[in-house]
Image 1 (tube, rainbow, N blue to C red):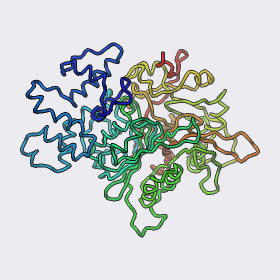
Image 2: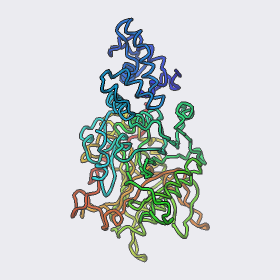
Image 3: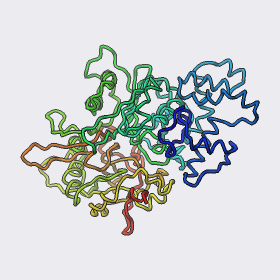
Image 4: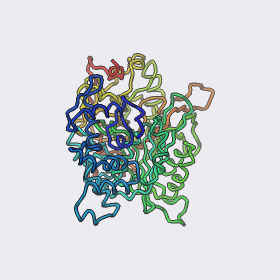
Length: 576
């Protein structure tokens, strides 16, 4: 068995990983222990993490009681260890021959039965929040017309039952369709953790294409161990650019598909005690072979925008998926796709501005109902870029200048709306489920913060009591305008894009040239506009309005401004 490349620094907490990699430091502690939870952990290690990992070893390599038992069961741990590394059929078979002695189990040899027995036996050791299988289709149906969810929070029990909470297992649930292949586009991917979820969903042997931004040793060689997995690192034009999009494309056996836009990386911590957002598309059926090329487009042009976005990766393995999207019926989608791609972009005659904050501005100018200039632009993200020496430099001149747009007739003198930024304070993080470690998803640093002291006057604390997530630090990113007086939301964006020039773009300042928006990152999000989602000018806020559900904001309103003694959480606090 290969030694884990992270060695003593391994932070993994899933049995799939421990079934594929050995850990000399854990093996040494485990051998000296009694296999029942009593271990002498050296002071140099994190006791909590090591004990969690040792518990996994107890399950993967249980210690036999006697020499005879050891001899008779010697083959079992190896079969169990190899289970996730082989096809799910073989792994389930080896597990069930050991774990089940009932005649009924012996008679039932179907793949589905084997998968179900394995899942029932092990899934709660691997996934902290487990929802009963088969119910996701109805949950998605009840989430209409917004289809927007927050991830379940491990340490916030009310979120486990919340109708608009979701787990990764539910997204892969067979009630939504029988997955035959999938694409995962993400920044950080723990492939062992992800394949563990695929394993319990019964789709480990299905083709999976992974496009990732953050390189890891496990991803580089995954194809040798899992031939059904193709992992491709997205090449970026500059060292500071990031392939930051979080998107899933799920293909079903009946030819239909589904798109998921997310804010969560694909590793354990992001699905544990962090507030994340996801939009899940309705089912997108395959069009008939003789369908017109224009058939199946949504009123929002989502399909065309998604294809144009995927083409920008210039990755040949995406071509079959782009062709599949072209031949799928996207007419049920009621949101706009808003993406960012690296490069310099100018306004076109057909689509207008194609990417970044300028694209969002052009959509708002065309479709957003007129909004009073006193209504703030409310931003919320998990990191903040270098925004300039004052609020005018980029926030007002570029970003808010795009996000303030609406369909009001031209010619009227307009004011710059207020700008508010929701970002966890030091005290917000200190009081989180994970204490200061909860700030691990908030990479805003002291060097950047010291250069923009003006920002503090605009900062708002993270509060989410209504959604039971005040102590679950936000990795979600959202942008909106709403009116508390008349309880209305004018529009809302859920996206991977943090508040930064790299994510949203910055216009060149050379007045002799046509404005060019320079973007560094790949990002993806969705824009909810009332006219396309509910047929009205605004979404209800707080309470349903004449049968229309209230828009599910992820945080509490009214907002809570920073107090004079408050300070934003900085990543430096975790570095001593």
